[in-house]
Image (cartoon, rainbow, N blue to C red; front, side, top):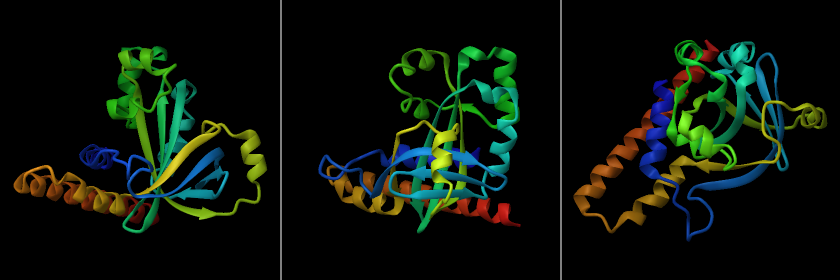
Length: 222
């Protein structure tokens, strides 16, 4: 849970600024995801440009959750890719339909499976879902993984049978270190002291995020 909090602290502090009103700061490349499947030790993701493989991290937690009755109440998902400390990191975000839960099952979902009400994630819900779902509070969880680009020989089969991701999902690979560097000169309007305090906090968030992700990967490989 602390990993999720640090990740969103970083996003909230740095924001989603763009370069010249166009591409997001720190953008490495964009892709469109066509499908994904989970196996014993990996998640294989097929994009139009690249194939990706997620491993370590929260694989076991995700596999365990997908076997529970709650999994059938997932009504939206999102994949994120970012680069932190030179390493590609994958994130898989699950949204549970609050209308399918009562007070007891909602509490069990939070306490036993690491879900939480995270307003920062609700903004990514499609407009046709968000107006109703936002009023109820949507339980979400972000699962993190070590990621790498690869070549999947069974890509057509994955696309045909996918259940893990929304088809035709656009994703940007953002280098968080470059995003930070791009944003520092953009805040010259702030006083020197205020700007210094802000970016010390951002740097701490970046360092904490990288450290926590490394801890997860190290623990998963022990």
